[in-house]
Image (tube, rainbow, N blue to C red):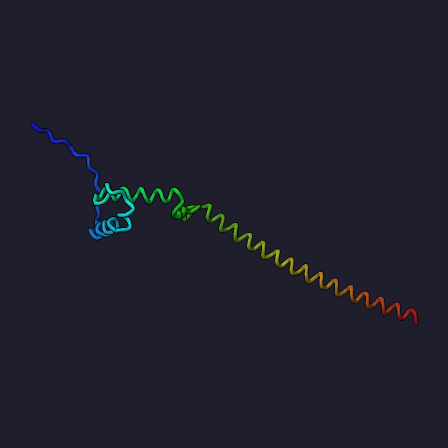
Amino acid sequence: MDEKKKRNNATITFSDKAQKEKLLLQLNSMQLQNLMPKSTRGRDCQMVIWAIDYLYNLAVRGKIRVQVPMFEEDSQEKYQLIDEIERLKKQLHCQDEMQLQIQRLKDRVRELECLEESYVDTINRLKKR
């Protein structure tokens, strides 16, 4: 009895034929064909592997920007930071208000000092008379 050897094939399947056709169209574009080794061209599986390796190496070498979020979308750290930012904004607003009040008080002190000077001058003139 002949025993058939099991083939160790892995396949990539597409649920939508249009997706596969788009992928092959892109892989067979002149721009990508000129980048890939000749031994890879025309072999669907090899072109997919080459493209993923190429993309991966670009990302690893920093040739393309890879954005990784600092925190998960609904993480506790994110909400704590948002709360801390709000608290600091309020604190900054209070400090701005205090600075404004301090400036008003300084202006009032200058005004009173001018009045005091004027009164002293008036008193001194009256004393001389």
